[in-house]
Image (cartoon, rainbow, N blue to C red):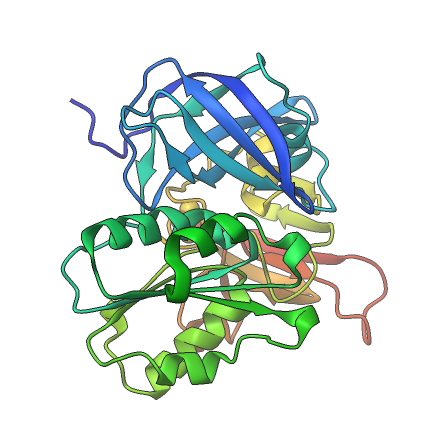
Amino acid sequence: MADSNSQVWQRGTVHSAQEIASGIRRIVLRPDKPHAVRPGEHIDVRVPIDGTSSVRSYSVVDASPDGSELAISVFLSPASRGGSAFMHQLEPGQVLEMTQPLQNFPLRVGAPSYVLLAGGIGITAILGMAALLRRLGATYRLVYAARSRSAMAYASQLAELHGEQLQLHLDDEGTSLDTRALVHSVPVGAELYMCGPIRLMDAVRRCWLDRGLDPTNLRYETFGNSGWFEAEPFTVRVPRLGVEATVHSDESMLEALERTGLDMMFDCRKGECGLCQVRILDLNGHVDHRDVFYSDRQKEPNSKMCCCVSRAVADDARQPGPASVTIDIS
Ligand code: FES
């Protein structure tokens, strides 16, 4: 029998789709083979891009008890040529290919207390955890940060459910999250679960380690969709195999290499497992390391990168034209 995280592809029918915040669409799906959903789970969905299909992961925001209806929420990436743009044009009755719910971000029940932290669309991975902790009567705090109220999905629903446990931070109202203050307010022994932009999560991780808190109590979901720099097209070359490809701004280097027919190694596709790592032979520009697999020390020499999430970026001051990276794969 397949384990719970083996991908089983099936058809899912769109039951409803509506915009719930600026650039965020809530899509309710009815899978052919329903499966009960646990907090922290996501589904993978096949989306067409330039005539081929790519896989995108979306957290399950909420679901009926038997999983016969489940909701995801999709942020429309401004540079999208296919992924989120495809999801945003879905209408009721349309059918797509999806997996059963997959678990990479489990909530450990029984901690003395919890802090749940969401940045922007990262709320989709956190919302179900908060609901479960409330039902269990656990001690928790839900911290939700976004650019503005209009970009904040589910804010009123969360306020109603969590009351004083919910703490909102809005950049355009001058109440941006102070990550240092947040981490210093976490009781020793508490677990912190977070999902959001890499800058936010990296800042929390650094403060967490600076404070000497137990690293195993800090848990996160990445989805590898945000970096230190804007995604831009770049060229990847694999001279040993005679391969060259353009990596478009809304696809990963792994996807671009797969498009050329290379048989690539990967597992998580989220910058967590390191299976997709490639050796960098030459670099024109610099690397936007978006993974959480390497330590800062390992990232620094730019000798390897996780090609499922990390990208090459032009170095404006010294380099005209797009970045390029020459690699070898094992
Ligand atoms: S596939 Fe897991 S880090 Fe890239």
